[in-house]
Each structure stands twice: as structure tokens, then as C-alpha cells.
Image 1: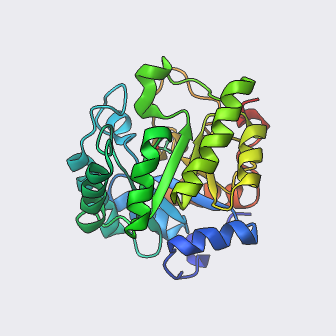
Image 2: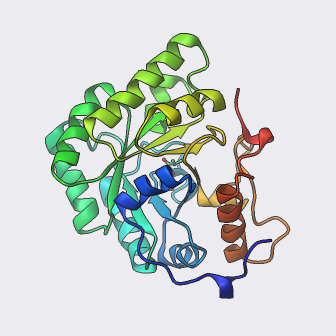
Length: 276
Ligand code: KIV
């Protein structure tokens, strides 16, 4: 049974080292995207561990067809709003497209998101040339979450929003990149839309936690876009990994509680949400 809101105990703030402890304790990390203070407040009350101000805001809030038009100012504005709604949940914010092309640019962008946007961690996509930026930030006490697999900022290069890592060469590249981002200093890794078995192997091989979206149940935690979780995204075709947790429930808070419970108890993602 899902606990009701009155049963949710007050919590100590979730810190970056707590995420590592959760991996080692086998306690799954619950993450959702948020873009404003009101929803953030409800997520905090529901016991969500990490809230991500994702550049998905370009699609679900601004109505674009990709995340590419999102600016650093946009993320900073939404991050500051979300920060005002949170008491204990850790706040992570996305570095938008081309705002971390060099270590110096990444440093300036991340500093803005932390100093003005109230973020405790920044997320960036890719490996390769991005490794220098990950290293530069983490060496300067800016916690970094890396993001591999389907990286939406590379949608033009990838030719669409497609599952990644399905053939041997692509899978091997992802395994290597995951080790590289960890070695560069990332504290967390989002794996998006890759086969569940591959995500499990990567999670096993890393000392840092992984958070999956369309990456199966073997990751150390899960993230969903809030609008998908609430059945609001209005997509013509719903991706396989999405589940509407509001269906059959009468409050947004109950939907977040159900998601958190299902992630923690290993009920989400289920077989029907997984790529092979
Ligand atoms: O922008 C975003 O919301 C994200 C999540 C899908 C992981 O990057």
C-alpha cells in the first residue's frame, strides 16, 4: 500500500554523498523533473530524493519539438522557482545545449545555476570532448551528473529520439564512456533509452549511482519527466518507458507517492517499460 501524505515523515536534506550511500545500501534513488515551486513542493512532500530541472522544459513547458532552444537563463529561472519549493529534496539542473562546450564555459554556466538557480548539482550530456568539462567542474566542487545513451541535445546527430546501444559496437562504446565519465569526476550518471541488460552491466561496473529512464530496473534509481508521470505530455505516441501514475488516483501527491514507492520496491519499471 502507498502511504498517505500524513504518514510522510520530515526528512533530512538529501546530499550528493547520500546518493552514493543509497547505491551502496541498495536503496533506489527516486528522481522526477520539475519546473516550478508548486509541483516541487508536492514532490518534496512525497519524499522524492532528487528533482531535475531538465531542459525537457523546452518541450513540455515551452512547446518546442526539441530541447535545443532552451537557454541557460530559462533553466536558471525555473531552477530558482523549483528551489523555493524544496525543503529536503536535492536539486539538480540541466546545462542546456552548447553551454558547456569548453571547461571555462561549463564553469560559468554551472556557477550561474548553482549561485542563482539554487542547484546542488548540474547535469550535462555526452563524453569525449565533454570529459574535460566534467573534470574541470568536479575539481572545483561543482557536483556533476553525466548523461549517456539517448542524449536529447544530440537529436540532430542521432537522427531522432531512438534507443541507443543496441549493437555490440554501440554497447561497448557506452560501457567505455560510462567508465570515462566516472573517472572524470561525475557523481551520478543518467542512462536514457538503452537496453535493460546493458544498463545493468554499466550499473554493476560503476562505483557512482546510475539513474535510468527507459533503461530498465537494474539502475540505482529512476527518473521520469513529470508531465509523463502525470499523463500530461500530450505526445502522439507514448514512449514505452512512460507510465501515467495519476491514472486511478485522485491527487498529484498520490501519483508522486505511488511512483516513489514503485521505484523503491522495484515495481517500476516493469517488463512492459523495458527495451531489449
Ligand atoms: O531534460 C530532462 O528532463 C532529462 C531527463 C529526461 C533525464 O534530461
